[in-house]
Image (cartoon, rainbow over the protein chains, first blue to last red):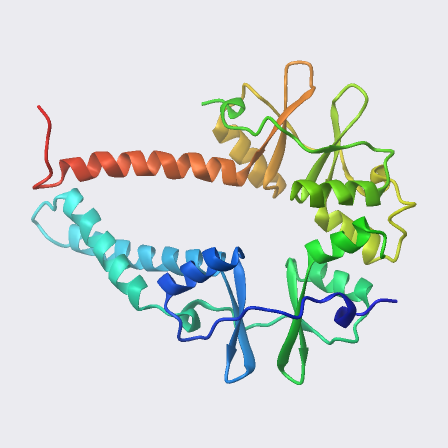
Length: 159
Length: 145
């Protein structure tokens, strides 16, 4: 039976937690991927995906809208709603510029050991509702397996 | 706006009696994770996803060359007629926790597929258009008479 180490991609591009979000977006585009493992001092500390960034931006926007609504409700002066929109955009924009990968990454890691059989790797993907799982040894990232990798093995008759 | 206006008309399909290995090859060739399974009259009778391949074939140790698509597909997929509004497609996706819906014509034949991404793209374009209008109305913006 094939193991995780037999099918994993070994050349995994990673990012560091202090990378700023605009640089992360460029990294996504450069690498043609939608997620990266996050590594600090050689140790795996998290993962970050486009959806993590979007989720963080939505939280920022919601917070800014709460602030804008507060001022609208608690003043007698009728506020120009167009100015409020501008304020919201500025607040979100300024905050996003200062956010880093470490602020939005997921720290709850789903990993498998290199000796795990492929059918168990498949079950890990399904049980955790993810498309990629990280292969680690002693806390160190050594590879990655995606559901597409497994479909490829099925397609070429390897499994 | 009807869902038929925004759906993808080129749909990647599978036949119920072909092997999962053959279907998996098509997923890779077409870079898709979903195939609509149709019968001889082009009616959608199932959906096969990369998740089905991983869960129902690999995780259970079955031989993908022997297993037929009909044995692992999700049967009786929810579909929507091409003349129904986009809001109904979104409600159907939410109800079924599905990101993709096959689209059929008046004879229940498959004519397209719509994804949540297709709807999001439409909404993003709409919001961009609203943003343009708002920016033009901001103080200092140039106005045309």
